[in-house]
Amino acid sequence: SIPGVEADRVNGQITVRIPGDILFSSGKIGLKKSARSTLDKIAGIIRSDYSEKTIRIAGYTDSDPIRKSKWADNLELSLQRAAAVHRYLQKQGVNPKQLYAAGHGQWKPRETKAKSRRVELVVVLDE
Image (cartoon, one colour):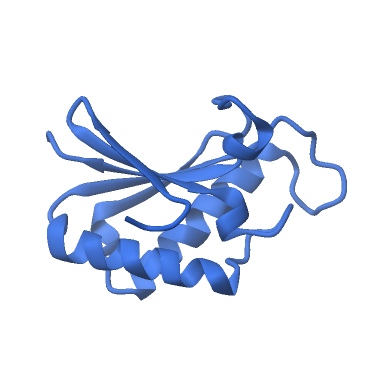
């Protein structure tokens, strides 16, 4: 188990939810230094247990409008955050051919704004 990270297995896929606050500062796409240990552990698990599986990296935001950053909107921010995780996992030896990044912006919220800000890694088991 990785601190702060939730995982569940439903309908032929494993979803790993990483809170946005673990990975990024508000409105930013650069990974926090503290995020690296979390992603290093995840990269190790992917390399050892899921090296043949497709991994979808999905970024999500809360519904607050973008005001004070260079991002056009929440969709762009969510895409850039998913891409940042993709690039980091690739640097950690995960095969980029098994990864793809997607952005969902604010359109798939969770119970709170804090939970809505997240990156999910979905391991597709049944292909």
